[in-house]
Image (cartoon, rainbow, N blue to C red; front, top):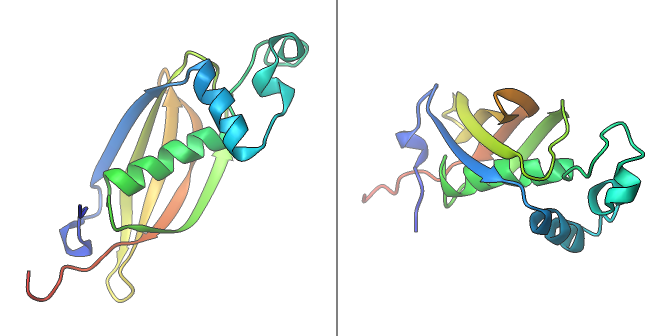
Length: 142
């Protein structure tokens, strides 16, 4: 399976997904990552925090960004090089996270694509940043 080639990309092009964060997603992410901070896993503890309830790991939103880059834009064949992220608001269990990536710049010489990345809940930004990926070039014989 091949995603978009560098030559198929243009500034302003975007792709998005929506994921509803479930308790099982947070628990699975904790198991895979080893981040067992009780603010993510223990409702009694989480009630004592400013959030008043369990929140998802910030990097779960980072994983949603990675999924859009690796499956949609540019998609299969893209190689993640860098990612900056600012965590603006918490994501709670049950939230629908809309993740969007948008091509911001194309480096023809290197085949690198710079994309703005944003995750939103109810139209409010929860995570934003910038990613750089290497996109595969179209084969000469294609």
